[in-house]
Every structure is written in structure tokens, then in C-alpha cells.
Amino acid sequence: MLRPWQTKIWLSRKSGESIHTSLSNQIAEDICSGRLASGHMMPGSRTLALQLGINRKTVQQVYEELESQGWLVSKPRRGTYVADILPELSLSCENQELVSQAQKACSTGNSFESKLRLPNHVIETRSINDGVPDTRLIPYELLSRAFRRAIVQTSRQPYLGYGDPRGTDALRQSLQHMLNMDRFMNVTTDQICVVRGSQMAIYLSSKVMDPKKGVMVVEHLSYSPAVTAFESNGFSVVRCRQDEQGLDIEDLEKILSSYQVVGVYTTPHHQYPTTVSLSMDRRLKLLQLSKRHGFAILEDDYDHEFHYDSRPIPPLATLPNSENVIHIGSLSKVFAPGLRLGYMVSSPTFINRVAEEVTLIDRQGNTVTELAVADLMQSGDVKKHIRKVRKIYQARRDHAASELQRIFNDKVSFHLPQGGLALWIDISQLLTSFSEDKPEDILSNLPVLSGSKLFPNAEAISPAHIRFGFGALTEGEITIALEQFAAQLM
Image (cartoon, rainbow, N blue to C red; front, side, top):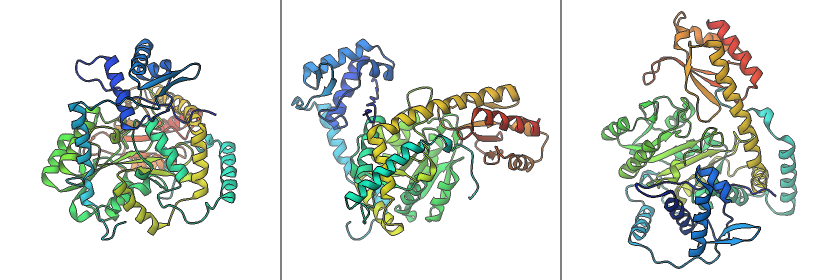
């Protein structure tokens, strides 16, 4: 059986600190926090060195040092594991301060939870080809076997009755393991709710927040179904400027000085629609503002799996001051949108409030689907499938970029995105001889481009752009689409 998820370590170096010290401290911290549990198998020294881009000998020395201190234990011909019995070390003043801060963060105080609608009691139809996955890559045989096993499982145990509105235990446990190992997070199953895709998570998040207590902020160019969901729940939406680094923090600070803000919706990993990644400096500043002003951050991490050129930046939910983050993810792009599976991660208070809304909407999710996907995650087949399709999508990205340069030369411009399933292309030079409505007509007449989206002359980003989804097209289809597009515009 494949190991379900490769353990990843995020190396954050402090000023003047060596790589050896940073790595040693980070592993010890992950063990203390519970992210790396007793008995957990650590990645091999070669694997971790490649992941972090450092010398393998450094990793080996760190492992040996942590073994001597009692944090790790080496088992011949098996690997390195977190020790079953950890050393009893007294907390330093610095760590004691961190614990105190974490305990304070658990209280509602000036956090986004104070803006929730808490109960008195306790407890477009056409296909859009602007970044969708290719359903032809679905491993149908793998899925069918998983569904058969899930159905057999439900026949032997009472799974098909009413269950937990947060999702089956099996899938939430699989998600917890994936998030903790692959996304640098440290969450429990009580912090996870399974939903029918990221759109449902966005809607539910705004549903349980109170529009009377403030506005919702989105980037100037943002995911329109999310904006519609916020407005349908009574929120006034304020748009924040953005640039080549993503959300403009200075403009957000101006908004905060003029409005009471309940939440900020953002797609930091690959911004929709511009594909840029929010810089680490801005991520940290955004989180600081969230803690200071007590607003929620809705982090829509819709395509985290498809990052090609470098190690993915950790989600906002893993960074300091992230207690107000609502992390939203999707399994739809991994397999197919038709599976309708997503998840959200937040505090148990928030998740329980969301679960109440789920009960009112459809009571619970699809048990058989959740059990089947949990089976695939636990066996390691999901990881294997992601690794396979990531290579295919990267090749399609590179082919699309090459064809754009060959066909259009310098008449279009774009930055090669680090990940995702779409390109953000400046086509303003091609439109100089056309009226404003002509480009939309051209797009609608081209079958392979009819689902792409045109963004003409937006205030924040002045040139006209098209978001061209390459993920659902083969390399041959990409060439045909772009050649047809060029024939219409050149």
C-alpha cells in the first residue's frame, strides 16, 4: 500500500539562524504541537532534502541530533519515526509566551466569531472553460472499484441512515491527515466540514456571518459566483485593488478605516482570475489586519494540488495570526466537478454553526461518495492520481505558452503562472481594430474558446485580458483553439 501523503516541512528561517537550527526547531515544534504524532514515519533524508532544496547531509545531521535528544527514533531498514515517549522538557520563556497567546486566541474576543449569527441555544448553465479539469483523465476503473467497496461497506454497517452533517468520519479523518501532512496544517476532525464543492462552502460561510455587522471585501477582479453568494446573503460587497502581487494591502487598510468589515474573500494561491500568487509579505500583513480588526478571511484554495514550478506557499491557515481564517478547499478538480466534494476548515464553533445550516439545506452529504473518496485517499491512490495529472497539466501549460508565442509573437503578453489550469493573457493589442462587443461575439463563435472569459478594461488592471483555460484541452486542441482565435483577430 502506498503511503497516503508525503509529510512536508515548512522551513521558515529567522534572521541570523542557520538552516540546521531552523529545521531542527521546526520539526521539534511540529512534534510538540501534535502535527507530527508519536509513531509517525518521517520522510527520508533524501526526500526531505529535495523538498526543501537543501543538502541531504544537513537533514541527516538534524535527524541524528533530534534522535540524541529523544524526539526521533531510527529503526533499521524501516526509517525514522517520531518517538513514542517524548522528552519532558520545560518550556522556555519564549514558548510559554506562544502558549499564552494561543490560549487567548481561543477566546472569541475581537475575532470574526463575534460577528457570526449565533443561535440562542447551544448547539450559469453553459460550460466555462477558464480553468476546469479534463474529465477524460478521470480514473474511472479506480473510482468504480472504490464505489463498489463503499457500497459493500454500507451493506455491512448502518451507513445509509442519517449521519453527521459535517460529513462521514472516514472522509474527515482522511482530510485531516492530508491537510496536516501535505498542507502544513494542524487541525482536528472537529474543525472540518465536508460540503458539496467550494461554492457551497463560500455560501455557508457568508450565511452564518451577520451582514448587519459589516461588509464583505473582495479583490477588484474576483470570482463572480462568490460575490453573488455574498450579496444573496445580504452583504454589501466592497472591492479592493490588486496588482501583480495580488491583494493590495494598503488599499485594504483604507477600506478598513472607512467600513466595518466582517470578512475578506481571497484566492491567494492562484488568484482568480489573474493567476498570481499572493506574496508572503502580504499574506502576513493580511493576517495581522484580520487579528487586529476581527474580520474573517475566506481563503478559497481551489486548486492547491496543481502547482508546478516550486514548492507551494503554505495556506494562510498555517501562518501566524491565522485564527480567523476559514480555509476552503475542493476535491472536484482532483477528479471531476461532478463528484461535488469540497471541505472547509475553521474553529469548532464556526463548523458547528455551518453544520446547522447544512442540516437545514440537505441534512448531509452523499455517504457512498464520501466513503469511496476516503478509501482512495487512505490507499494513496489520490496522491498517485494527482502526481500523474499534474505532469499532464504542466505539459499543457507549457504547450499553451509556446503556442501563444509562436502564433501571436509580441501581439499578446502573459506571465507564466506557477500553477493552476489557466493563463491570464493581455490581448489589448489585438482589439484595437474592433468595437467593444466584437471580442465577445468572436469568443462565442469558437467552440473551444466559447467558455473562456474576457475581462475588458477593468479599472484595477487596465488592458483587456482573457482567462484561457488549458486544463480541459489536449495539446492538439490548444493549438486549434489558439489558431482559430488568431484567424479571427489578426
